[in-house]
Every structure is written in C-alpha cells, then in structure tokens.
Length: 569
Image (cartoon, rainbow, N blue to C red; front, side):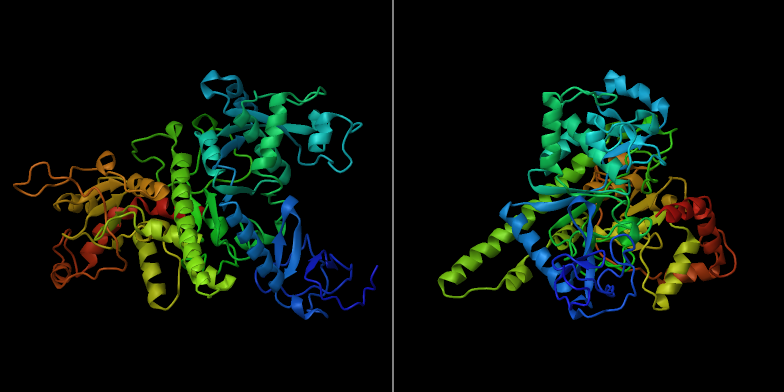
C-alpha cells in the first residue's frame, strides 16, 4: 500500500482515497458542481492538497449509485467515451423519473383492492419495502431465504406494503423508447424503492402476475424473464436520493451522470423545479438562469384517480395547471407517455440524421486527405438540448400573440417587470415560458392583433374582450399545456371557452387553430393610453386606476391559485 504522503496524480478518488494507489489526500475544492459530497468523499480540510489536477474536479455518480470524484480531464474523457459508445449503438440516453412520471405509488392498505381488479389489467402491483427503522445491515432471521437474497431483508413483519399503479401505455412506451435510448432511472425515492419499482415494471412487461411475496421455491420462467429484462433495460443505471443525498432536497443534477451536461441525453420528469435547482446547469443545457435545462421533457403529472385520497409515498408531484379545467380527455385516458414517446422518436431521428450527414461529409473530406478531429466533429453536431429547443419553437405558427387571464396575478407581473427593468435576470413564469418557448409572443393587454386568450376560466374581462376580436380563440389553459406536453399543435375547438367571432361575409370561418411565434412585450398604443387617462375604458376613474382596478378584479379570484402554483414550482 502506498504511503499516505505519496504525491498522487491519479484522476479518480473515492472517499478521499485514490482508486489506483490508495494514497490519501485532502479534499479538493469542487469547481464544476460546487457540491460538498458528505457521503462519498473525505470530509477533510477541503484544501487543494498536493494534486493540482484536482483543483478543478467534480463528483460523478456511477453504476450502482456510487459517487466518485474525478478531475476535469477525466470527466471530459468519460463523457467522450459515453458519446462514442452510444453512437456505436445508434442510441441516445433517456433519464426517467418514477413517481408521477411512470407510476403512482401509495402505501395505504385501502389501495389493495385494485390489485385484483380485472379492470386494471394487471397495472396495479404491490410489493414490500422495509419499515423506516428496520435494520437492513444485520437483517432479521437466518438470511438464507430467497426474499433476503434478492432484497436484503427477510421478515415481512418489518416491512410495509406499497401499491403501485403503472401509468397507461407504459408497456408501449418502454418497448418504443428502449429501441433508440439507453434507459436510466433517476428518482427522489430510496434505492430500495427504485429497485423494487424497476422490477415491478419488468414483471408487468413480461406478463408476470402480481404476487404478494416471493416464496422459497425456484423462480418461474416469467420471473427469470423479468430479471433478464431488468438487466437489459436498466442494468445498474439506477440513481436514487440514497446515492445523491449531498445534493440536498429537491435537486437532480444531470452533470452528476453526464459531465458534459447531457449532449446526448433527454430527461423525462413531472417536476421541473428539481432540475432547475441544480447549481451546475451550464449554457448548453439552460435556457435562462433558474429555469429547467433545455433537454428536460416535462410530462403531465400522473395521478391515478382511485388513489386520490391516499398519501403519496415519496414526494408531491409537479404542478398541474389543468386541474379543474375542461379538457377533451381525462386522466383515465392519459396520453402522456404516448406523447412523450413521439417526441423522443423525433429527437432521435433528427440527431442521427445530423450524425449521418456529418459522417458523410467527413468521408468525402477523408478522400481528399482532410482529417477532422473529434472536437471538430462535436462542433458540427446538433446536440439534444438544441434539437429540443428547435422542436419547441416550431410548435406554434408565426404571428401568434397571446394574453393570459387568471393565470398570472397582476402583483406578480408588476414585481417581475420592476426587477427585470432593474437589471435582475429572473426566471419566467411557467405559463409564459411554455408559450414563448413554443414560439408565441406574450402580451399584457388584449388588442385586435391577439390570436389567443388563454384562461383558467371563461368569465373574465380579458376573455370577453378576446371574444369580440375576429379570429381570436378564447381557450382554457389545457390547450396550451396539451400543446406543450405533446409538442404538437392542437386544434382549439375542444378547448374553446367562448365561440370564435368570424369575419362578416366569411362562411365557416375557422378559429385560429394555431398560434404564432415571437418574443417581447407590447406597449400600449397612444389611443389606449388616452382612453386609460380619461378613465372611461371600462370602469372609469382617475387616469389608469380604472383599468388597473378592473384588471385586478379580473384576476383577484385567481391570485391565490397563482401563488399556490408558484409555491409548488
């Protein structure tokens, strides 16, 4: 064993020890992710020590949930190897959340009745997890049972039964995306929980029936198929809060898995905030400070209606702006995974079309004696965050101008504008971000050029004004969110809150079935300012006070909703 005073220059450490020579060194100062890893690195003096290569380092969570500390050069090499391996397989990387993304899990015994409900078609599963204070290291009993060998504990009396509802179309989704993506699970649940859910999903995929507990008998053929499928789909690519506790609560870091920021990665999650909270989002991933990475696919939070009175096992879901609104579909007919699979197929096709084009060009250049470097090839490629950004921006047609009603409180708008004018770079309100990212221009006031009024309910003043404009569609927030979740343009007809006014002499005039792109805020015209100054636009009053009073009344009932939404997000 090497002497601890040995000046180690190796690139990888675990717990403050070199993985190659065993030399002990003081902790470096992480520069990339800036997280102090209290679980997986040495809690020493936090000085740079004798190894200059570790002055710039980062923590990397690898297979099995272990976190190592690597130099910047080793992290770059690791990323390059990952990209080369994925391209050789013609795949991208897909990082999947579990709760309210793929499944809905509760631990209330009342949920057990759905396990045997034939209407569920086997989509409700149950499994045991150890009670919070169970001693898993020592185990209970002899430890010789199959149950103990598989899951590390043997006494069901120290466990709590969990009930898992798999999201509709999960089997179709997994079968589709696994052909083009390498799957990784990244969950806010514990490692035991993540392993059990992954196994339950694979048992469902192979058609194995739901069972209460494993028995001492040999596994059936279906069980063996489930184990093999689990190894094929997920392998050791499962990351849980047990593995990344040093990041803090409600934080997921993509660079913990992909040091390059996920150039070939897509995340699917019902919560945007956990990714936006990461301190290490770089310019490739991030659209704006404090906003989620560009390669995050936000999926509608899934809630099984029959579990609504039971407490969720792990965490609250992401905010669902469509709750309580009218929609052409219901949660029992949830299309979230089908929409997401379609988007992922488009991303994969576009990425490898670009790879093939660059490869063909390089082959021609090679014949002319010109050989490009790997770095030059990377610069020519369109990476996943950019691809998703472009797909989003093309959803709504040109010249879409949108006004919100009852979704963003006036007080919130004033604070945002004041701080932005003061030079503070703030994240946008989620609904404004969704609209702008899809190409819409978001306005403050309704005028004759507005194409859509997007509202929580249809009785507001802005909705009434929008209904008087030819071709303006007054729609529920569900329309905007369904467009965003599917990244396709939805017909406004099923979402209308009021009839669309048609131009005179035009038969069968169609509502603005789609909106349009652009950015920025429109200033009020002189005529509007004059009306506001006279106080006779709506309620009358002194100067603009009449307008503001009416607008406040318009959104007053919804301020609580907006505040609650922002708290969740």
